[in-house]
Image (cartoon, rainbow, N blue to C red; front, side):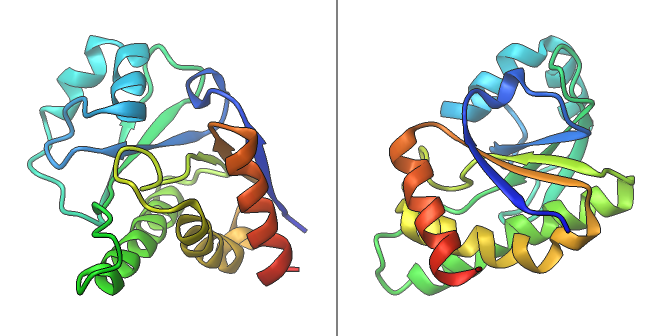
Length: 171
């Protein structure tokens, strides 16, 4: 049975069929992790991304990974956290949709190993507790479709939150 592995590290140094990139709607280098992934992958990634028209929030597209150890990148446009105001519920649904879109693209492409960051929890400011719950809800339901799923987190504190969510709701 496939378990979802929670680790800390640098997603740009990891080998998998695909890593997931939190993307700008025009697939240009954004801020944070998106900027890092684009920088590490090189100018060929930017050239390939220009072939796509705008990508909507919650959707995902696949590109080659070029200079990264992974084979491909699945880009998904994450919503901005609205601090729990009226848009908060729809933001959570859109964040879940990002994970589902990535799963759909991975299955369509025949990928068996995926590495996710904490989508939305960086520059888009989703609280780790909410981001982890939305992510793990989708990933737990789909993990049987893959050989290996990893969530790569930027800090031990974030990893602890994700582990707590995983233990509380999914074991």
